[in-house]
Image 1 (tube, rainbow, N blue to C red):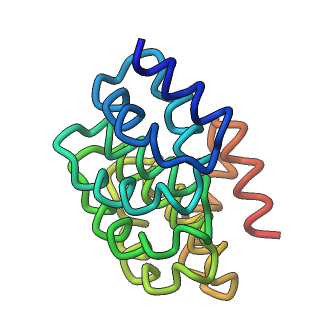
Image 2 (image 1 turned 30 degrees about the vertical axis):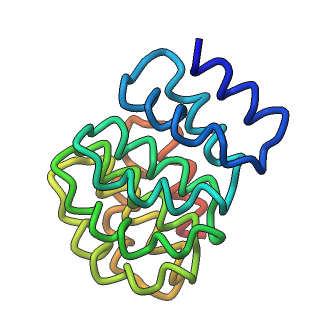
Length: 171
């Protein structure tokens, strides 16, 4: 199976670019292996950033979401993807928008150019997008208080993980 081979190559030689196409293909199929593929692409690190950035424009929402997740795991070393992730905040898929917002926050101050778009995402119709935009604003610019109402709302919500993250962001 091509995906298992790509995952094996990625685990044996995490810096190899060879498995990138197969891993992206597996994301497109949205199989049971999608999360290991995201983790393998992230483990490849900065060398996978160009392919992951291109994948943010893929026709499949699952591929776009997975690419954003992997870029977020790579973090500040994927800062060249900030413009594409900022565009992804307008994705038609709520999961893709939330993953893009989360990825931008993981890049910290290197994602400062995304702050205006993240501020607009605070009014998104999807709760996870609003939440991750607020967390990301707090991570990129702790002095930006626009995220406080959304984080305060998360503190009162039912999602335990969000409450903890909101409390940490407000601390």
